[in-house]
Image 1 (cartoon, helix red, strand yellow):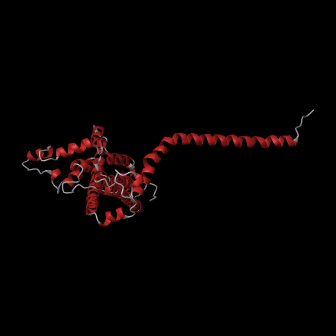
Image 2: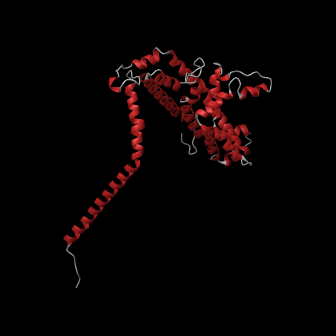
Image 3: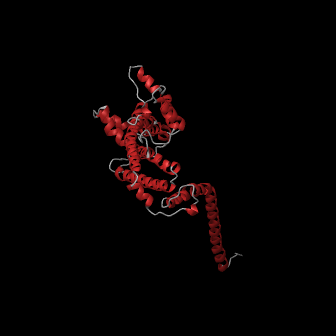
Length: 325
């Protein structure tokens, strides 16, 4: 005898099973989402406690006369007075802007040029190239350390190693770090010397350039310079753009070397008064944290606008291998 099942019972069982599966799937997704937030919680706490909340607090302080010593509950709201003072009544502020722009406009292109030149030299399979790559990268590992800045200052003092080297050729040296005409240039040389990080990025980009392009250009009779101008640079344009944005931001944020060289004053004669050093002096030397907060927000907006300009103009000269810009 054939056994049959009632149609109604079959329908109820079949419809209940998908609903149970959906509920189980929903609980699994909820558990996975909760686990994700648990793993992200250290970063989220750090973002809120170290970045987001302090930034919002500094924005509020930029409209007050906060001086560090006064409790936050007693600070006075001054509105746009700090910003008005910055743009109209503080000549040293605009001097710091000029010094920072000069430093960035000179040091950053020269640093990138040095990095690209050395990367081209080291992009060869000759013996010992790995050692030279490590040696050229070594200064970048030290970064903006105080120890490196101290060594640099001592090297370019009146009795430093650089003047001793010049004396071997009968050349009289200068007090480079204490001469207002040369102090900023000394900082530029230090920044240019630390070209290891962009050099490594350029090396990685050079490895991605197809050798077939050089072979085709050589067959067409292109010289080495033509190959560099018409093959290497266009293929490296995304890497150049990346390094340009990063190094420009780093150039505007220069602080440690200027602080060590001038003992935190921006001297001699304010020749090394970088923007970040001026901000530090306003906040921690003059105890005008409200004014320093206003300077910080103007600086943030300026860096953001410069980055927007880079990305807006990059589409005219940055070429990608897939043909997109």
